Amino acid sequence: MTIMTKTIDECVDIQPGFAQGQKNIPDGTIHLRMNNIGRNFQLNFDKVRTINATKKQLEKYRLEKGDLIFNNTNSPELVGKSFLFDDEQLCLYSNHLTRCRVKKDLILPEWLLFYIRGKWLRRDFERMCNKWINQAAVGGNKLKKMQIPIPSLTEQKQILKILTNASKQFEQISDFEKTIKIRDIQNQTLLQNIQSSILDTAFSGKLVQ
Image (cartoon, rainbow, N blue to C red; front, side, top):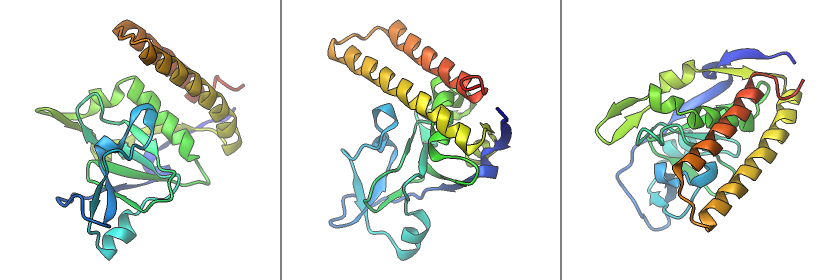
């Protein structure tokens, strides 16, 4: 397997969101915020705010399917939690989020998601973020400078099949854990370490020879 390494900036178009004090405007446009990133890196519409968006905002910040949304500002342990947007609804996003739109001739959106997910599981973002009282952030420049290994698109697809199956199994384990109300921190840490190990193997090119 041949793997090249590029910065995020070289293979992803990065666009931070915008602040908006309005909320719950009738028939307004959905304005996603950090609490819309749910468990298992999924989009959560339970607490959606709507705003009066300008034409310029609609053009600049409208999300497309395949956009990765990176949580740049949150509590330290949640900074970096991300999801792939895959919805038909018109959605914009706040300044606590950053849109990452991949250059699809180089990298698949899912590849970027698993890479970001691995770094979050290893708590890399928690270590690299700037911290204030009850809040932390990873600036756009830090995100852009991050190095990401990129095999061919064919190899990315092969590895993603393995990672997706493994991810589903871990989600099932997590669901079972919640059902029987196990809250043992060591078990949760073990699961995260195993997931992190699998992702490390994948991005080092050893998962598919």
